[in-house]
Image (cartoon, rainbow, N blue to C red; front, side, top):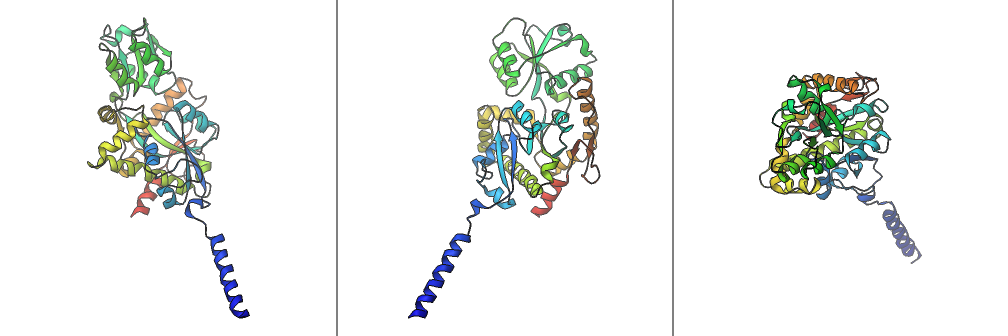
Length: 358
């Protein structure tokens, strides 16, 4: 009887130990990383990924893709300027940002472009009132838009293509939402604004005489939206897995958009994360913001070639317009090949993701 009680007690102790040491998957001690994103068509994919429970936003909450890659991703949604501030202040590991806006923070924080998400193809535009029919009519007049951003870049590049001189125009700093509202309300003096979507669509739809004089279709591929990760974060344990999980989520959403059965639902989901636009508007938006929807497209952008020339143009613009205090060192390839680059575009992470998926 004593032996029986001893065995029963021992079994109970073993069972209790099993309960103590069996940790549910949601409480796994995975390394955690944060991604700051703002509402923009290709960046809102991460908001949809959260709705689908592929990536759960909070720390300690694990979605399907986080469990797959054994990494905890904290999604930080904020307006674009706040995302830039967070990244520059080391308050997030990664950020959704343009190839132009990353250059300044990269001078103090080595940065790596791991995933190009889209390019502006009409999403940035110069909108004028009905009284304006030619760019020459804007000489000496104020053109409102957010200074030292892709808006000013789009404006300056188009002037260059038209044979105009930037000094003959007065690009005047103004928040795009405020500029769009001023034009929609037909306030005096607001005959020209440079804004991005959704302000482009809203202004053209709300003011009958407003029209687009030129847009970013004239500079295809020059404004690149992407996910950038700090080099120090990639160097941490789990850094590669974090990059692969972000890449996985992005391409999975694109496959849903490519599938006729799930395309509309996915566009509606993106619209809910992007200024609450409806399905019809989102169909226009994804034409004006061309997604780099496949790994092959992403690898091509990050491998140099045409992108190398684009980055030289963008870097030169940032220097002459005093967006950066000095020219950042920009490179294409691995850390081993370019250890001192301020900003590096590296296709390794997409390539490794593709290989892991085979």
